[in-house]
Length: 262
Image (cartoon, rainbow, N blue to C red; front, side):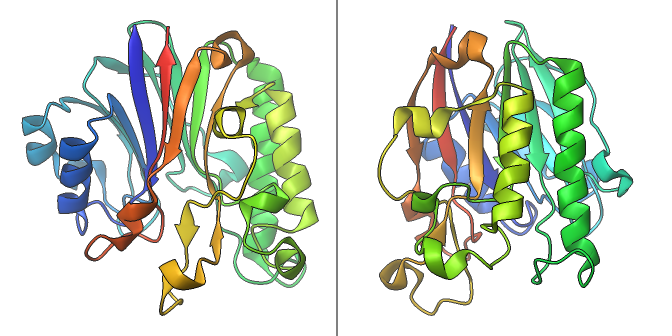
């Protein structure tokens, strides 16, 4: 069985329903994981997605912010969601496909603007969230699993436009990178995107603040696809759809794809 999975922070699924539909029509991933859907599940715009073949969904939603959803052409079973750091936020949902693969969809807290937990509560919450993700992976010992989402950290030097200039900027600080590395190590997760594309600058997010996001190209790779070692070698075809950032009224993130032959 071969299937393609995509992850995309959509920044309001109701506002950008047309963009999601366009991606479904043009790229047709078998599984589409969305973050920051910003809606309760009961108000999720399903009708058009159903018409395009995405008749299965597991989700956790909230009014106005956060929220994660997994849309699938294939049957998928809801296998829970964790409230890491006890924030009461809809930031994780897990679904299991009929082939036994479990997909974890995450939206890690952004962490505010000041990289100091004493001065910025949100930064502390981000670090606590990652610590509990690490502990969960240690305990759960994930197998036959894929972890995707907006992890809000660009870990490598070539995952940002300027390593030196972003060392003190939230999303690329050494303490965040270390917390993410510990989380990855705890589950023995393989960074599928970088397994496929080991060298060169890669970005999946460009700020709305940039007047010319494409020309300035000050991006960061905040969106990730990981897999457990038992299936990571089955992954291929990773790509980041940069042109989506130029669509009408876009999210500031673009979709990240990978294909698995299992």
